[in-house]
Image 1 (cartoon, rainbow, N blue to C red):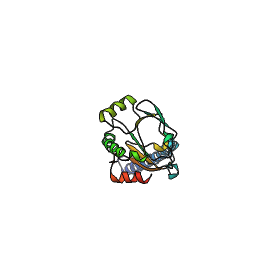
Image 2: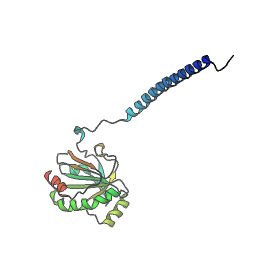
Image 3: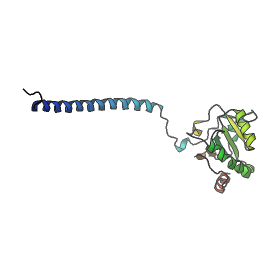
Image 4: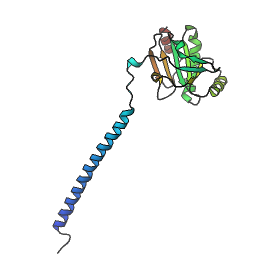
Length: 189
């Protein structure tokens, strides 16, 4: 009697096929169950997309000047605002700051409010600003900025119209003193 006969190989192949089908089927069921649970967990933290109806400026937040005085952002309501979030440790932020200074020098008499905000400690920001010689308004964050002004990166710049609409949002460094920026800001006045 041969152990390795035709029936043995037929049984072996059938067993392998059955094992593979069970593994594939079981894996599919497990994967669907895992994906379903993971999807539910992910779905529970999703936020609605920021449709244009949500692009109104939220003035209900506070910042602190480098002199230590708190400023209510609501005092800028009705004005065009150049709003920039930055940090001293961020090379792209530092790279664009000279152009922000030149933009400020060019249009500060137009009645446009400049609000440049870092979430770092006031002493660190003050030291940095003094070393660089910047004169445009720089603040530190008190609490959190509103949801409408949150981004995944810095520098992040928002331009707010007089009627409170966020009319422009840019994440990343830019040459803010370019003629197109100056013209855009002046047209909002």
